[in-house]
Image (cartoon, rainbow, N blue to C red; front, side, top):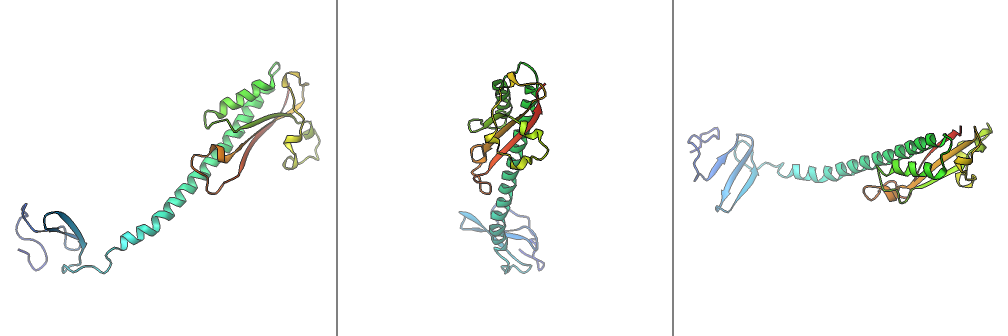
Length: 195
């Protein structure tokens, strides 16, 4: 039923034993009526020596692709959390510059902003007196924010500097178990003057 060029000359019927898809492509054979077996063939119907290469390539490339994908996702999430910390600190500090606003209200505002992105159970928010920054010799990278004295914003003097410092361990807010940023503490802060 086959011509010399490999094409079936008769129309295919339901009881045909061989279906030819194309000259150089996949040929499918029915085996004992229970399942279909797929074989890559060349023009003459012989098995190709490259049989299974695509499966091996996929087995090698797929783990690398998913590792890259999850790494990209993890670092994007770290960046999102860092941006949220800075944004919450800045908005809470803007609230804190006004008169008659308490430190508790400022901390609550920061928690409210952060709770829209991740759980805030592990978040540490501190409002401190930032008078140390009035000195031009101070390097902000070397300041120990935990040692700064706390401040009650409702009692702050006009033009007094204060800092809102927010920290969270990334392990507590990660979406997946962290692979590359284990044990990292993310920080956000804002320094403003009370009015």
